[in-house]
Length: 247
Image 1: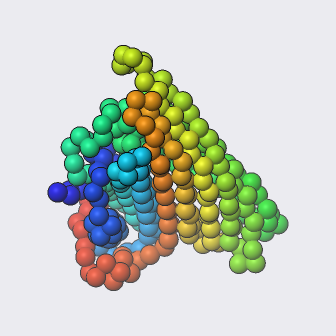
Image 2: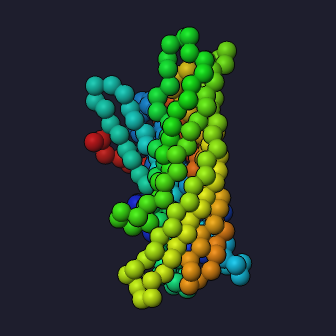
């Protein structure tokens, strides 16, 4: 049975359905709609898929959405959701379970920073950082170097390719077990002159555990930032509203 929680720390699942994920995306956006006024909507989705050598499929997803209302009385609503059916017993090895969970709950991408606003700048390079925390102090990291160019519409468009790998020897068990994670991917980023953004990071690679074999890994993160009125969000969501409390 599929359930949703208001945080990003959930159980790994081998049977997440695309329809349920689409419904979750709708709920997350609706949760960001304040009662009247306008603001900036930031929606981030993360989808992860891992396939074992014997074709067992594990999938997970998370959504973070934030609506910020400008003005003297700044109010902000943040809600994070993750699909999490199952009891964690689907994976045959504790180290595999830790790593697969971390791909969803330990994932963080710090995108390239601010780009120049002066009219003369048309080319720029900026760095982002992909980090997956397997446990405290054990992190996979990849530097994402994006090359940007600005067109006549004053929008910045950037692309990047990246690759990295890590080896973790888990000495908490006897005999010690070894985990290897290797990922490569690409990043696309479009930032318009009004502050809107559409960005996609895709990565694929392998997760290998000495005592449990190899898994093919795919992950996709999408970020969209836009100016949308509350009425506009309500129309998109068919009038669905979620109560919120100003912070």
